[in-house]
Amino acid sequence: MLERPPDKDYTIETSDIVPWTLRQTFLGIILTLFPWLLLAVTLNNLGGNTTSGNTPLSFQADLMAAIITLVFSAIIEGAFLIAPFYFANRAFRGLRNHIQLAWNALGFRRVSSRYTAGIIIGLLLAIFAVDFLYSYVITALHLNLQTNDQVILAHSKQAPLTTYATLLAAVFIAPFCEEIFFRGFVFPGLCKGMPVGGAILLSALLFGVAHADVGSFAVLFVIGLALAFVRWHTKSIWPGMLLHMLNNGIGALSIILAMQGTIH
Image 1 (cartoon, rainbow, N blue to C red):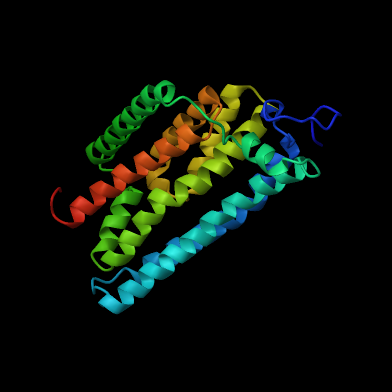
Image 2 (cartoon, rainbow, N blue to C red):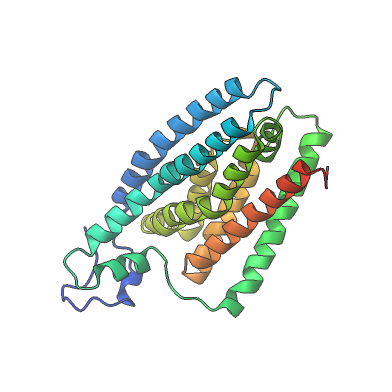
């Protein structure tokens, strides 16, 4: 049920109240993540079977695979948008500015760039520190874990164009869609039924699990914590989206440099 004043003068300011219930939040999580995880596991298994050889794809085959990867990434990442926009628009249906209210409720609010710049830089450095420490522990303890970056880099030897397409989707498509779902819809919805700390932890856990990447789960969980924190602290989805994009962009750049032999 929509929690709002009975009058029709529902303003942008009052739409800070999350208009979807905790039950609707969990329904959106179940209907989104279960099919997503099933698809991700299936694709990972298929990918392991098709890239086990060392023979590079021809240019034409690689180009076609790259195009399919971009289109498919847009479609499957777009699945993250269904529940947020459905429940947000449903809540404000019938009001004159229902679209603007729905977007605002999902976190599309203005925020001071000067205010958030330090937070984004600080959290980005913290994520890199955790990533470096995690890689060191894996190497030092000789753990049989392979991070997502290592998988992508290994795949680039057989299909470089497809790898570029994967990285492009990771930098520009994934941050937009995933932030709307996890920090625009899930996190504020969870805050209605639990303390903020619990909502941050649970949303970060769901974010890590959704990637179906055991080797990178610890780092993904930390990234989820940082993104949920910045969403709570700024009340806007934009800073987290930028942080998400910068993190993925720097990771993509390191993979590209490794592909070119610039770094090892």
